[in-house]
Length: 322
Length: 270
Ligand SMILES: Nc1ncnc2c1ncn2[C@@H]1O[C@H](COP(=O)(O)OP(=O)(O)OP(=O)(O)O)[C@@H](O)[C@H]1O
Ligand SMILES: [Mg+2]
Ligand SMILES: [Zn+2]
Image 1 (tube, each protein chain N blue to C red):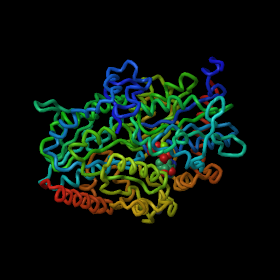
Image 2: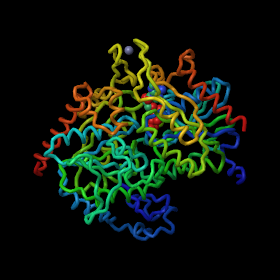
Image 3: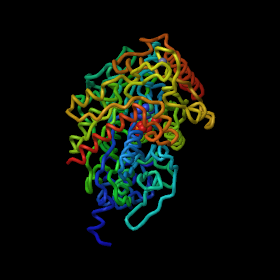
């Protein structure tokens, strides 16, 4: 996988590239000599430091989607709330969406700030057993925009993994920005030594979304990231008045279930389009505890159970204690 | 080759260049780009769409052009014409990739370099409007597109949002981004604003309502209008059909048309 040092020039081809040290962009780069020498590319030492740090984190789960706005952050928060409803488990959420952090609002933590402690940055707590870290906590106002190029975002993600005082965790859930950008490559790379249990992929039913999600699946395969399964979100809307279902985002090519069958991937389930989910998120409340009897909550619970099963099965087969 | 000519680039005969942006993903940038382009064409304009979404290009599907082979002429890449009258042209950066899946593991700098080149390397010829569809967020790609378009021509940006706070929060930051880089905001569109049940006509605000308009007020940006959540629109877009032609009676058509009129007025007056 290619890598770009934080002090690299704008068009750096990446240290692992054939062109490393040779492209026109490399002229004047402080790393040019090392790159051009073809010497075995030393991995970023942070990868090992992060591995050390992550020794106390049992399961690491990425939430991904090739398409924007399909509900990754919504799913990440429900997954976190769902896992943390077992008070014996310690759960944390990491938001690596540097340009569009939505977790602070969805968890009702807008305006909170992180604190520096002796052992690093302290995350912000939603519950005793649920903590969150997001760049949103480092911005001073809701108007603040983070306009960073790739290398700077990567530095931030490295810090989130290495310098946050995560403590003992059963689950670390990483919410990602849409698409496949530097953020995705970085998180996978920085956690490569520590090991990621797998990725949950979110999509909506229509082909416009699935075509991007297939690319994301190829991304996972390219970087050897296991896929826990695919969730189909916004699947059918039930009219609150007449109770008829409308397919607002029509599954014209068979939806996520068909895609999973074609690609031999686990299909984790469907979550209906329920306006109350969006409202809970806007208000920063847990939908699962506000509408526990809704069909959407039942769908979430089934999906969360499959993820738990996957993780505990993985710890048995990979030999780490659960 | 005459260098001053090359500097003028392929946008020399393009009257207006508009960026379609959103800090939030999946709010309908590509859909709005497509529909605005179709509506402009119906208004008798010559329109081009430049799709710079490397990892998730949607426009080719929305206009039913698949993955055509593209050719080069002296003044750059020749765009693909969607209709026989050649009034709607499309160029997607995805067309240039030998293996479209490769881009998913590219870092920002590599994408930036490609986009930078691409933006000024399409032989558009004469156009009234060029719409540029962008990937979600504010990243390297956006900075690169703006920097490169600006060398030639860039009128401003249309920002798309959905009404819920989670989305307007991101777009609020995007507005700061536009102001910081001195990019004119032509206006905000509130998409997916209300859903009318086809069975009983009850309106449900699935993604809330009014958030886009409130944001426009709060930030002093022009508000272009609301577009409802319309299953006929999503299925037209899925199947690459011309919604503007198929449903000229719908409220959604009227909404899109109003947006287009507002944009034309604001650009053609100045
Ligand atoms: N007003 C609407 N009514 C119904 N469906 C809509 C509407 N606007 C957009 N959609 C649907 O929503 C989905 C997302 O839209 P689109 O792909 O245009 O978003 P985008 O902002 O370009 O996404 P990305 O951030 O991934 O590029 C598409 O399936 C589209 O058909
Ligand atoms: Mg798009
Ligand atoms: Zn109804």
